[in-house]
Amino acid sequence: MSFTFKMILYLLITTFMMIALILNHADSKNAMYIEMEASEAILKAPPAGYITNALQQKIKDNLVAVRGMNASAITIEGDVNITQRKAIGQVNEDILLKIKYPRQLYIFFGSMINSEYTAYRTIKTEYAP
Image (cartoon, rainbow, N blue to C red):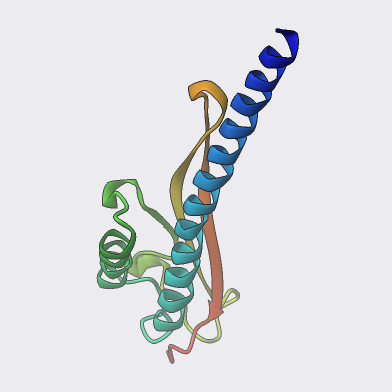
């Protein structure tokens, strides 16, 4: 009887571990898409010298369309308005972009770990004063 109980417990724990690994792998696709969107967006930022509202909306629309993410949960930080526009000859010519999205990882017996994806990119401006 003891052996049967130990085997059932072992199978239960390994099953939960495999489910957690599978969910983590599926969840890592979100990180890849966020990194890809950050790379594409930062390459489009230099002509304006900052991350424009249209570019921010395009990032959110793409992530919602491709991965079904919640648009209100996507946070875009960095040089995101015209007052933060970068120009050649300034002390800091780097345009910054940081995209954040909350991440929930389910673990044993319904527990959850909350963290967030973060994609960080910088690029030199090409905006001529």
